[in-house]
Length: 265
Image 1: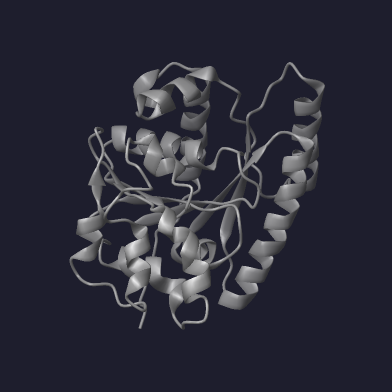
Image 2: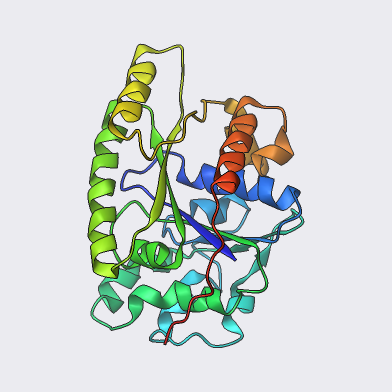
């Protein structure tokens, strides 16, 4: 099982779209894919037609057992999407209470890792959508993943947000005592605007060792796919954004490493 997380401490930069875009392409290629929503806003959950305000079983339930995951819980939480090979662990708005209720309990940073271990042989890829704040939920995603994707909108304020996220990554890596493989993914790129072109140049100059060489363009087909509740590649395989996500996925697979089955006591 390969576990990738999208993360950024600025919202609206394309985290959820990146999860759905890559997840849809992986599922179409025949892989078994699990999407995990750890954001209390539940954008990924809403994308596939579930309501984070009303859902009975969600990733919130993992945090109710003091770090011990009941054997049947991951399957109870799992939702099948309309797309073959693509499953979802949805979010509940109750996730917003995790920080307040559980931050003082030990072992809360490994809850998602323990849940995924139970599903290790059931999926080829897991993609995690994270909230735009550093807390228990993001720490869980970073602890569980082998690779981090950092979507960054090609505009000035988003670049400032990336600087915060890079400091957070450094802090998490020190606390976990391990290096994390990460890649900056420029998003919402509009070559017609000076601001977008300039922002992309800045990103490439300041993060040349960890940035994907291309960018995800602005594409209204992404919004249309979201309204239809299907991955962008299902909605319009020939759209500019889908071709870009295909290129990104090819890069990620070419630079992939074999994951080691985790052992958590």
